Length: 492
Image 1 (spheres, one colour):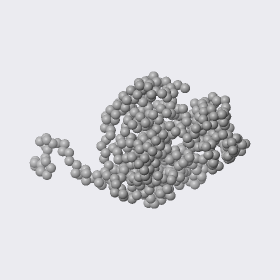
Image 2 (image 1 turned 45 degrees about the vertical axis):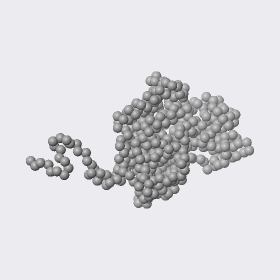
Image 3 (image 1 turned 180 degrees about the vertical axis):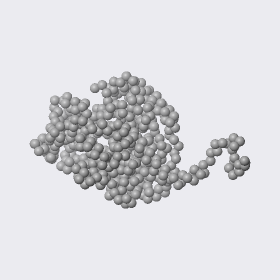
Image 4 (image 1 turned 60 degrees about the vertical axis):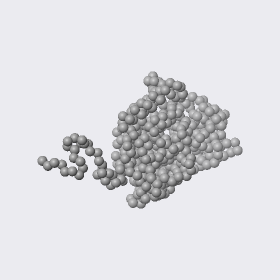
């Protein structure tokens, strides 16, 4: 494959190029007056300590871009936490097992419109314009390195190894229990952004029968040492890109036989969501009425997404790879030697099994949201019951406001719920794919930041007014027309 480029970051010329690029980025930011002066006013929490303006939970692609967007708006009183160590935020360095990103290489997002901060600029700083021309798609680990470069260069303050334990309403603020290297801590924030990725939208999807099998039965997001099953048989359930990537990784690790089980009669052939990646849809979708938003997204969800062509080829180049279409799993049994995958057509002894059917969207499953779960409005309560029954996955999406904030099922039931903003896949029914897929990321982070800025200012507008009145910056001094304050200007 052309342009894999996995080692370009390691040679001296590449390091020199990135150092020069970082300087260029900082010059560009300075030209844009970044960072602007902070403007929010202090708020004291119920514990007597200053409250944060925004707590961003999750420092992967979405979380760091949202934080960068806030910094560009002069909101600096923030904390950005992630439970993973540096470099393990999000899927890129952990359970994502594709060789390259599925998106075209030219897409932008984490740069927020700054040319020197694009992936292309990052790549060309190391491999030149010819290197960019020959690059096919973005290597997965290079995307991770690029995200870390953006974070470090623009100064997003990430606290790694720091986990959110619980959130609760706190008289116009949100209380948060977090645990980091320094131990347990309670903080209060005026706003909380939930940017915890696909898992943070609900939880991993596992069939009810997929229990037990310790060390042999996995979800595709688990850490898996496929080399343990060298020479063995591996079964993978799913038709997604993730399913194909896990099958390919098992094959490349030396599995003697890998079988992909697919409930559908064939792979989806067309990625309808690609059609939706143009500015009109990404910017305008949220302004549609409920019926049209529901129709657009449930249609795309129903059509499914085909695995990338190159990912399929990565598997089919191995003669020991097989696909069984129209054959979902109905059970998994443990044996002394491994597992038995059960389907309506037969029983298949295997050494390991991987469930690759994705993640549920269901914020009520999130333990940190226990104090809010009964109040969260969902799409299932906004559409006819027959539609909710026909599309149960879509019905569980949160019904969000114009700033991606959660809304109450019953107005007045829990007003502080609106201080929680979702910035992960859970926004998709309400706003489109603005928090998870690269094409919409820049639009989504900007929309979120602008909504937060609006709310933060409106909440303190009365306190800002006397500051305006007290503002003194006499622009005409010392011209003849300058009149010292308290003196009467001459008549006539």
